[in-house]
Picture 1 (cartoon, rainbow, N blue to C red):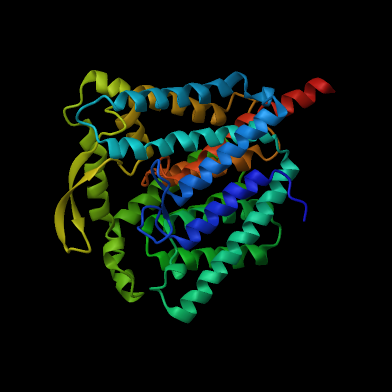
Picture 2: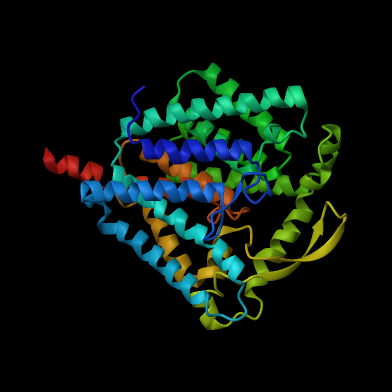
Length: 406
């Protein structure tokens, strides 16, 4: 098997295996926390650092990076400089936690992944081959989990379906539903992923799987136009209303699931407190530049293990928009929003290329999931976000160059 761009295979295959073996990124698993003398690292962080080192050596070897980084791609550079600068300034704030600041380096590492496409310059054929191999690999891991679940029961670590692994699996499903022509394969793959997400007993994972099934099929039936997008928005509002008003705990009891994971109203109340807490007594300067990477806020939340409410310090708000405002202010959020907005800008033809619609659908699905998770901060999810953003900015000049050469 010919493997082109081995560094891309290394980072994504390694992260997929890590997510399968270690369900939680912050879990205290043997071998997952790695002390190296200069500091304590998690396995995923070492994977991404190794991949970025390979990218750096690739640039040194070729003595050039793709010219396609120019134009709108400068906004990615500016955003990265903003978060690096504001993270550095946070070290001098007396009320900020150095431990939290050190963990927020993951946001910077994730952003650097956006430059992988510019260093390796894959074409669409390379990406399709890579996607097929990655999907086969992650399906193999999924079936292995089902096997362990059948043999050893749900308490086995390998049998657990964590949020990071289900995130990758659901995105693979969305691409498969868009590209593959066999309805039988689509139904089987959808059922496998849906069962896996149900076994996770996490409402966010189940919702992500459902929208990864629905949205690609929806836009295969209806073209991506203002009318179809408006209808989808209306349908989404209705679905959210039903999700909130229906008591899902009875169904959870019926399926022998943990009912606490399906108490939607209680979860929304906790999320609302998390989203509002960073804005309490915020100053205009903090609103513009953020409260710093090391900022945390005490929140009264229910601890299902202790079966009581307790106060915990949260450095993340389980919403990527509020997290960006809290850490990097409206300045950081503005540049991030600009990066994302340009890719969806309907009047811009620079972001229209082969399979650009699929790229934008996947980007939307990722951002939708980030509305209730700190995904931009987590390495597993953040890597997928920024690699996709990098691909979109890379390919936006690909078609323009082709036209000029004809």
